[in-house]
Image (tube, rainbow, N blue to C red; front, side):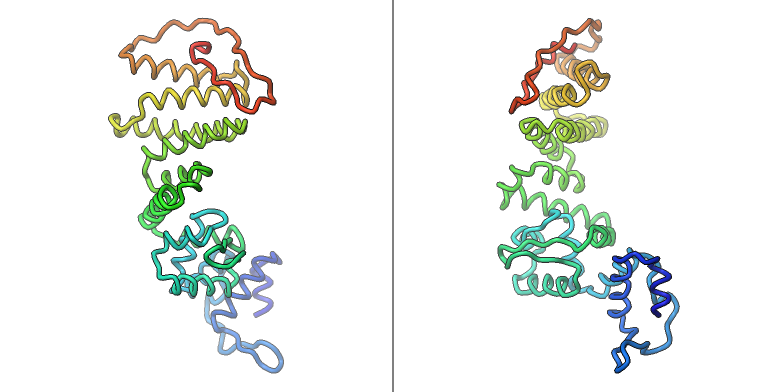
Amino acid sequence: MTAQIVAKTDGVPLFVEELTKAVLEGGLLVAGPQGWRLDRPLPPFAIPATLQDSLAARLDRLAPVKEIAQIGPRSAANCAYPLLRAVAGRDEPVLRAALAQLEEAELLFRSGTPPDARYTFKHALVQDTAYETLLKSRRQILHRQIADALRGEFAAVAVAEAELVAHHLTQAGLDEPAIEWWGKAGDQALCRSAFKEAAAHLGKAIELADKLAATAPSAAPGSNRLHLQTSLGNALIWTKGHQAAETSAAFYEFDRHARRARGVTRPRARRSRSKPVVPPPDSARPTQFSASSHR
């Protein structure tokens, strides 16, 4: 048995630990005076082939509390008990017992005491394995429940972590509100002078807006799209430079959508752009440049 575990894990410490626990929890070994021994002949495929298989097997043996493990990963990287309670929909004693069982299995770690506790998974692979066992339809429902809880009972968290709300709305397939929250996240990042982060968030908002425009034109953002394009252009000035192709493209898209909003379909002639006046790098808040200076 030991030789098989060593062979399959290739000496990776986390895999050795998890695979050993999986074998012990599977009831294949019993404690004796000389240590652990096989209780019965080793059945085929008794030892999981991969770390993910091992983690999945351990979660399956915790079937009554498995759903709690599936909810926890996507609530937040460090999930607060009140949010978990709001999404789980379980009675308090049942929820606490389930969390305690996951702690005992060393799949979850806890800091603090409920209702002020926070939970983290032992390893990202535990988090991913729990999530991957969910059906897509169930994943979307959970993401929507988390987004609703954040925007409702935990509004202060939502305001401070707009990208978290945006992520859950996106995964729930709610593109229209997701666009709004990715835009908020981008604006927040701009205010912190986190320009790469801002460009990433705003890029996601625009990607969803393009998708929505193609599938449901009436639901696509109007004036907000112009704001998204301007904000993206401002972020790209800092990350790529005002002469970069990406920056020019962002402001060109602003012009295109502005013309469409005015009912003008013919592209205006391209003309040379004057260099924008850029605030010093240590400015606390970047200046919002006029799109007209980038036409």
